[in-house]
Length: 157
Image 1 (cartoon, rainbow, N blue to C red):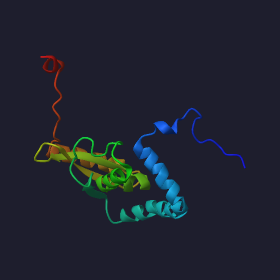
Image 2 (tube, helix red, strand yellow):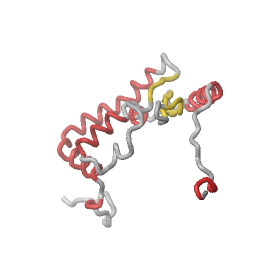
Image 3 (cartoon, rainbow, N blue to C red):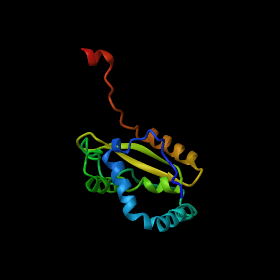
């Protein structure tokens, strides 16, 4: 049986970062669970769509906790610690990725230290319009915080 190449032959796996190598190794160890995981993932869009027979929009945080320090999810963090951090950090957004549905993140506030806090609005498949209209309405009632970007003169001066 001949093997087939998925990646370009010039791809050097040794240059992959720790997250990529860790995911590869994890998949190799748990490959036998892939069919069941794929079956469960295929059921997500239908279950998600049923939720929108009763609701127009779902409001959630964007992330599971406030913005961490720079480097918190760096690919240089050891894989077991990094994957735990990532799965704990992005607890809400993956549902829309799996379901293939629209969502929008809105900068609705700041922490006491000035870091942004986001709110996510999720909608039914194909209903981006509702999310955009709601985002415009929310911004008109409570303007989104702006990030001050220094001018060139301020940077040089």
